[in-house]
Length: 594
Ligand code: PRX
Image 1 (cartoon, rainbow, N blue to C red):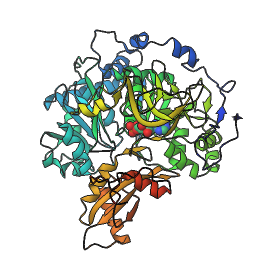
Image 2: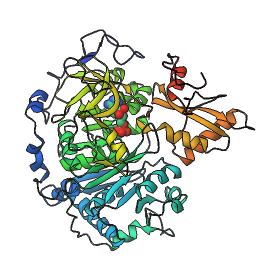
Image 3: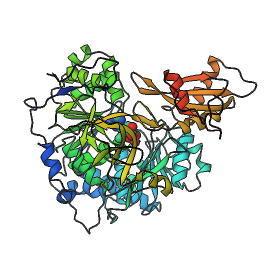
Image 4: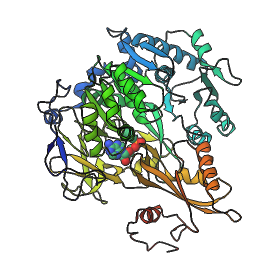
C-alpha cells in the first residue's frame, strides 16, 4: 500500500530528518470515488474566489449573513427535510432537519431580541455539546450579534478573562457550568443575562431556554449583515498576556464552505463527524458552519473519549467523513489495532486531522486501522479556515501538512521577511487577504498589526517547503503550548499559579509528550514558609484546574530555588525548556542569574 520513496522513518524519530526522508501514499488507483476537487494543480491555477460566490447564494453588493448560507437557504429549498444534525447524547438521540434547525434558530433570535440583544453585541456560549449550541449559534448570527464560544473545561478565571474582556452581554450555559459564571459575575459588569439550557426548573437570576423557546415565534427577519460585519469571535492564546479576542467576518463562510467541499470533500449525502469541541475554532468552522453550508448531515457526539465508544459511533452512524486530531488518533493507537477488527468502518471515505503535528506513525497506523490515510490540515484560529492541507486527489507525503488551498499563497520567510527557497527552514507566512482571515483583534489593533509585516501574515510557526511545494511543520516560533491539540498560553498558567498562596514565581513550558504532543510543565519557586512536597504539588495542580481550566494545568511541577531571568526580570522560558530537554541553552547574554 505504501510506496517508500526513501527509507521509512521509525517510531520516535523526528518527523523528517535532515535529508528530508519520507513515505508517500499514492492515491492513483486507490480512490474509489471522484473527489469534489479532482486535480489540485488545475484547481490552484485557475482559481478565483469570486467564481464561487453564487454557490453561497450571494453576490457582491448584497448583504451576507452566514445563517442564511448555513441553514435558511437549505430550509427554504429542496433540502428542507434533510437531516442537518444527529445528536448522540449519553442515553438520548435527537435528529433535526434543516427546516427544524432554521425554525428553532428563528425562535432563538426572537428570544435574543426580547432581551435587547442588538447587532454587534457579543453573546457567549459556555455549554456542553448539545443541539442548543447549533440553535443558539445560528440564532445569534440571525440577530446580527457576534457569537463567541468558551471551552467547557474553563474555570471561572478563564471565563472572566474572555467574557469580561469582550464585554459580553449574555452567556448561554447549562446548570452545571453556570456556577463558574456566577463565581465571577460581579467582575463582568457588562454581562446582563445568563441563559440556562436544560435546567429542570428556572434558576434564580437566569433566563430559561426551554420556557423562552416555547413562547417565542418561529418567524424572524434576519439582520441584513454585510460581508465584513463581525460574525464570530474566539479567544486564543499567545506567548504573552491574556488571551485575545480574534474577530471573524461573515465573509469567512466562503472559505469555510469551499474547504469543506474541496478538502473534507463533503457532499449533502455524507454523514460527517468532527470531534472538535465548539469551544475551539475547528468546532465552529468545521463542526457547525462549513458542513452546514454544504448541506451535509453532522453527527454531534456529546460523550467522552473511549476507543470503544468512538469506534461504535463510526460504525453505528455509518460515518463517511471524519475530522479529528493527532492526540485522539494516538490515544486510539494506544488501544491497539486488534480492537478495530471488531468494527466495520467500510462507510468511511476520507479521514482528516488538525491542530498539531500529525506524525508519520499515526498515518501509517491509521492505514492499518481504517484502511485510509489521515489527511493533515494546517490552519489557526486567526486564519479562520483551512490554509495548507492534504487533498483527496493528492498523494500524501507522510509528515507533511500538504499544500496551500487554491486562492492562497504561502511561503517560508526569514526574520526580515525575505522569502526562502526549498528545503530552507524559516517562518511560515501567508499573503494576507484570504476570505476567512481575522478582521481584527478585539480592542487590540497593535496585536493585530503585529501579525503583518513586509506584505506577509506570519503564523508564529517554523516550517519548510520541499521542492515540490509540500509544506512541513517544525514547531512554534514562540512559547505557545499545544497540549492535546489545545492552544494554551504560558502566561495564563503562570498567572494562575502565582495566585496560589505558596507560589512566589512560576515559569511554564510545553514538554514533548508521546500522546498529548506536549504537556504543560511548571517550574516554581515557593514563598518563605512553604516547603516542597508531593502534597503541595497536587494542591497547586488542583488549584489551577479549578480556577483556570481543567485541560490547562501543569501535569508536571518542579520546585526550584530560582528561575532564569533577564536583567529586566522576565522569566526566560526558552532557557527552562532547553535545560529540560538537555539542549544547548543558546545566547544567555541577557540572562541575569546564569
Ligand atoms: O502551531 C500550529 C498548530 O496549531 C496552531 C494553531 O492553533 P489554534 O489556533 O488552536 O488552531 C488549531 C486548529 C485550527 C498553529 O499555529 N497546528 C495547527 N494545525 C497543525 C498545527 N501544527 C502542525 N500541524 C498541523 N496540521
